[in-house]
Image (tube, rainbow, N blue to C red):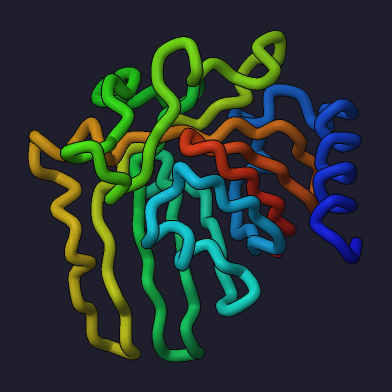
Length: 197
């Protein structure tokens, strides 16, 4: 596509096409998706800006139910064949609701600083295409690990602490879905373009 302006035009054209209806609950959304392009909004956290830089690392998003049929969205950053960061989030859709996932209330600024990223909330958090049902996956980050071969080192963010829980909630709106391509917009204003593996 060449330039980022061409990518933006391509995204806008596909979003108008819609793709598969009710994408967040479609079987097609499940699986491994490789990030090929992202727009890093100024609202994303410094960590997120690095963790979604597909020009430096292979980055994947896995969407799949666990053994208890709870939907899990995992962000996987592959540093090498034997080293990766995997951050898992519990997810909720209309077909797999998770009672814990209430609407995020706070933007996430801590003492006015953008440490964990600034989220859209309230009226600003409404979907870009409100007439498209089942296009949103809500999530709450639950755990993360750096994996080096057989060794795991916990990711140093206390996702499960009660006072942190609202700050680690988010959502992705799937604005286009086909068997091979997904376009999503996140709660911090970032747009993601992913290919199915």
